[in-house]
Image (cartoon, rainbow, N blue to C red; front, side, top):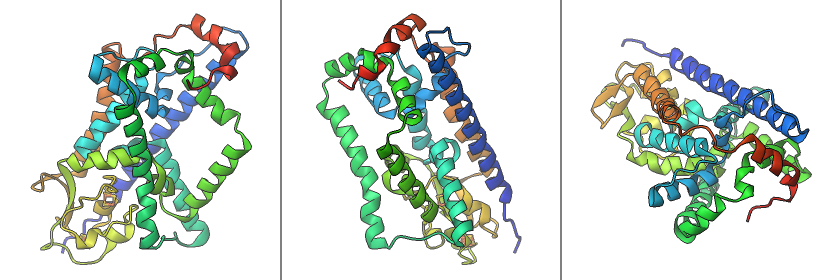
Length: 333
Ligand code: SF4
Ligand code: SF4
């Protein structure tokens, strides 16, 4: 048997994931200094980075509805909608690749459970009778947001919301949520961090409604992890190393919404042709092609948005300066 374990796949993923994480940190710090200057009534020496709007998926869902129904593309936070669309298209084409290749929260989550593994010698697994109902939490949260925004909220109300002073400074409010944390937020984040050390991807697996939505959309993806029973040597390395705890070694095709397309299973498989990402179950998608496609789809959409003028906010510096003194009084309408 030809040994073909491919650790380079994991190395490339870490490199991509952490490069994006650093880019997000850079954007976050720029936004922090931008906001600080505004608060002090100074002209910011740095520009406002649009990519920070990626942390506003609920507003993006409202913008998406308005765009589809009325053809109005939110000019205040267009990057929020673009990043949301990029993640959705990635899921429809390439499983939940956003979660394992792009999302900075996914990167922190993975770092946490790997650190926990080092500290405790292993990660813990929640019993399946508790794991199943817990996993449904993210779908319940997702269903709630989809119901309220897509079904209950009339378009006019969405249009009015996206025109409020609150929405204009929603990104700054979000920044303050983290820079001026309440004790409740600190305790909640500490609990989540503790659980993330113990259990693999605790936040992503049980609570993230964004991941829940991408997981359901990923059923549409023609790309799936496929195992050849003829070539599989039943070593179990794929299942043992799958961060989503999927029984890869006993399935012919992984249809699960928990599969993030991380290719960890593929990278560990020692038997050539036993495990691959495949398009429509027939055409093997080489890891390099999968990786390039995941990056190209996500950043390609952002590039198109930049080239067509749908990336930068229309909010002016003067508007923000006027709103800054009122920021603590601006609440969700
Ligand atoms: S099945 Fe493979 S690609 Fe999917 S989550 Fe598990 S290790 Fe990653
Ligand atoms: S598919 Fe899984 S069980 Fe089969 S050879 Fe590859 S790693 Fe081992």
